Each structure stands twice: as C-alpha cells, then as structure tokens.
Amino acid sequence: MAGVAEPDPQAKLAWNQRALEEAERVEDRESVAGFYPSLYNNLAFSYSQLGEDSEARRCTLVAWSHIGALEPGPYADRVREAIRKRLAKLGVADVELDQKSTK
Image 1 (cartoon, rainbow, N blue to C red):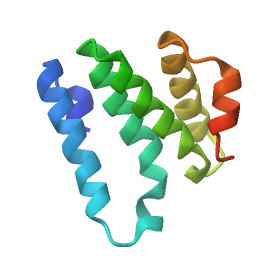
Image 2 (image 1 turned 90 degrees about the vertical axis):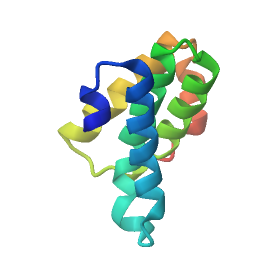
Image 3 (image 1 turned 45 degrees about the vertical axis):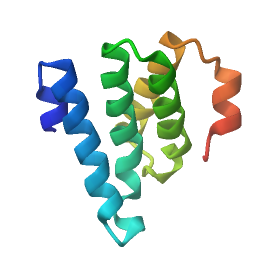
Image 4 (image 1 turned 120 degrees about the horizontal axis):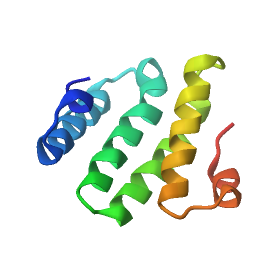
C-alpha cells in the first residue's frame, strides 16, 4: 500500500518493486496468487508515470495473465477493469487481452 500512496514516481516504483519481491519470496505460491494482478498493475502504473510504456505494457499483461487467481466478486471486477483501462491507454486491444487471459 505504501507504493500506492507514495507521491514521488521513482519512490513509488521502488515500493512497488519491493512489494512484488516480497510476494516472490513466499514459498506457498497459492497463498499469494491473488495479489499478483494488483502488484503487477501497480508496478505498471509506476512505469507509466515514468514514461516507460514498454515496461508498463509488459507488467500490465503479466497482471492480466494472473487475473484468474482472483476470487469472483467486486474486488476482482475492479482489478480487471483497472487492468483493461491501463492496457487501453497503452494501446493494447481487447483481442490481445482475450488471448492472454487465464480465466
């Protein structure tokens, strides 16, 4: 959450990278699977803020590839929509999303 609240884009990126690194350290991958869509989407936002659109696109596609790990419901709907909006801003069409979805 610190990465989301951080006003400085470079510091925000560092926080979001740390959050992802922490998730990667968890041995029980299943216990953190539902965090990956948001973690990667937050990381993509940081890269977008810094003008690194290629890396933002890559991270957002990774976020989308993990969307199936979310339990159905309002939270999953919000995360899915946030990822779709970010990808649209980055020029990725819905057809590409359908091919990368893990639903």
